[in-house]
Image 1: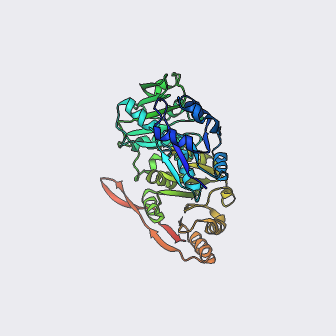
Image 2 (image 1 turned 90 degrees about the vertical axis):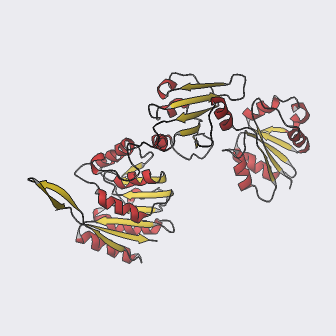
Image 3 (image 1 turned 45 degrees about the vertical axis):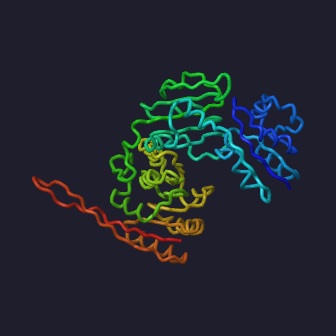
Length: 404
């Protein structure tokens, strides 16, 4: 079938003789419009120009490659395996040898121009053509944890939009059109980016000297840090036990059902930022509180679903973990739905304070063929009385756990 050569090129960098020989040997050379313009700038282009084809759609490029017998070349920007087409070709084109030829990546160029090391940088892609690791809403959380970020911008995620989510006191380098004659690298502050005219393509470097000094801990958020109505919140000590029993994965999907103030989902995401958290709450005011709590406590991109479970589950991705903090009379239906949709090796944790709720939950789990682990948590807190203190008991809470 022939080899596939995935060749990275960088603006301003010479074309190695080895690559020129590859271009002369292959049947077709595929390049996006931007990279085709770079290719035209090489003196040797006239020797292989008839082989060059302009394709801007990655899916179409891969399907076309599969149909061609013989050697082909695909042009990539910088390092093809750094958020590039190289990964998709190696994964999706079977039975053919794929050879990767990297050039300098935009990340390497940006850090070298800024005079900074990049081995300790956390890399985030907001480029429109890539599956994004993180939404922009997660930037405050990422900045809390990483002193140095490298951000690939793109599409609607412009430097101005990104800068609006960065903490005050951060330092930004914006590297524009690296390798081109009009290349520019500027050092600035988040508040100034809105007034800057920035050309594409560009990359951002962010340094936050306050990283690691988080105002909100990964574990240990207190009840009074959450906006809430009617006192509805999973108490601190109970929340700690719930999170322990959930055995949170680093990545996956968590449903927080009957979320109230959102405390379990919010603290879960601070512990495991790779989680997709869906907080389901039927009360409109409480749902608003969850959104505000996620922002103020820098939990990032939590999706709040305002609706009644189990109907509110429609369209959600299958969960890996589920916490059921409240569902009222719908509890049996919620449990049945969750058991029918949770991913393999998933965990369900539910809390209840009334005997009737425990009986309903136990019956629903047993009907689905599950035997829950049952724990009772009794908490007393010190409270002043006169010149002394006494221990005031909180309502005991039952916690059920099922591992699928």
